[in-house]
Image 1: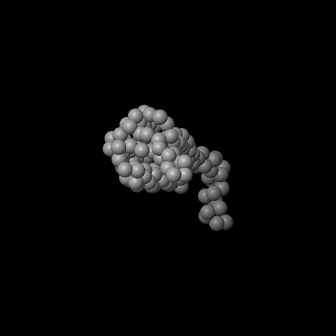
Image 2: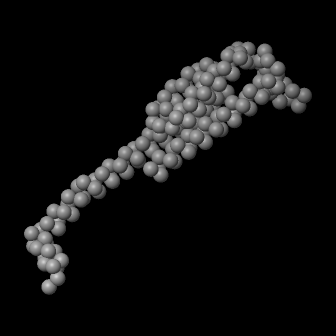
Image 3: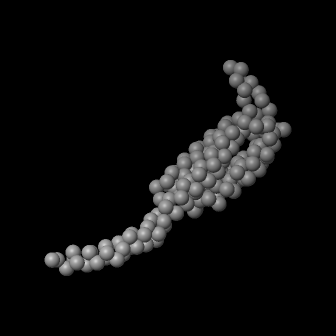
Length: 162
């Protein structure tokens, strides 16, 4: 008879197989399940925080009170910043808010914006600045917002991959 057959027979007779199996189940498998649950929890929290932030970014300029929008954006960015370890994303969020505030400071408050009509009857936002300058700065902000949204999505889906 083979030596391994004897050893396995003794282990089986003593019930050590079930003991060893249970030991690995408790130590190894439980860790895997806990890690998976943490990842799921983090994904759900990031999803909620990032979705709220993206909605606010996409709605900027649609409300009547831009200062309120900036404050709301700062408020909504806090959970997103807390849930990520991506320093690039954190910098992009804070830089976007700063750019938005600078835009608002430079081009004036809501009261200084006037709606004018172009030759085709379309509304044009006017401020104390030339329309081309406002348009260029709005396009820059829009590009930054698109970049920020892409970074948020990338960070969210990288949570699943971990």
